[in-house]
Length: 386
Ligand SMILES: *Cc1c(COP(=O)(O)O)cnc(C)c1O
Image 1 (cartoon, protein in one colour):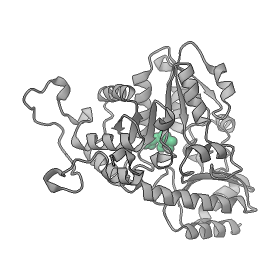
Image 2: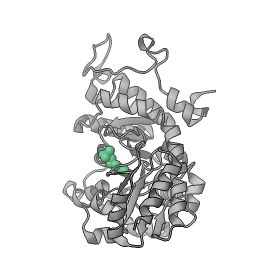
Image 3: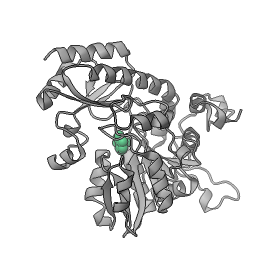
Image 4: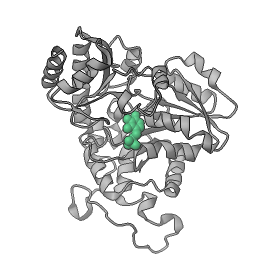
């Protein structure tokens, strides 16, 4: 069997690894060296230097990540936002236009809304679930369509196959932020996306102890991103590479446990009288459920919900739960809850939040790998409390 025919769990452990291990080391050591000795016959392009992301820690990670998403190439970055902004600045030029899905990660939305114009870039936002409306946003200068596999915090699943079709029809680069799904649940290259990116800070590393990002996809655009990153300077430090590499090995077992717990919790919440709305792609009530069933191997560890008592009740719930930590960010082994209006979407005005459907009382849950029944009992007690 070649590596690409193996299950993702086997790939997570073995793909891209240097074998036999250096000095017999089973785990790839940290190459804490900024530069490397020149070798006979080497030209300028062969120089190894940490900013060029070509140390063994970088190249092994890149090879593994590409295999995980059935793609040609990958590169790691200092953060998810570095991955996102480096994609824009390597693939777009002044005058270009981008079509974005309307409910995006707060940082991405903010950057597009507040920084694009200074760089001569333009953008429009579309409803990812309504492909027949996208052509209205198209301009002669449109170069890219950008979506998320599962949106934050409403966990919507856009018509991802239509995105790829639309991009091909109009010669656009298709880009997807695959952070929420992770490669365990969805591999965008398999349905034809040009580029996928992740905040590796979340599921890929999975332990809430580093900030990092990744770009995965076709070789040509990934090479352009890597080149631009060597100018912008967003290459990941060797120690953070090591931690990301270590975290990745358990991605499969973590994400499957999170898929299972999130589905159980979502079903419990949906049936609870104090809860007015639950957003989770694994629930038949979710508008993206059919698409998620077709495209994904699991529905992910993220869900959000609103309480009948609104913002006040949400604040009380945050105080009453004992297992989840009240904190922003997501994708770690510990369950986290947060109110996006106060954290990830605080950069938006109240009107902008209303426009994208983020209620002030919305609670987002990043389900960790604690015991499922413990989480359900804790949520039940916190809901009964008021
Ligand atoms: C966190 C996050 C980002 C930004 O990633 P950083 O690693 O914090 O820079 C981008 N997209 C999504 C979906 C995220 O959750």
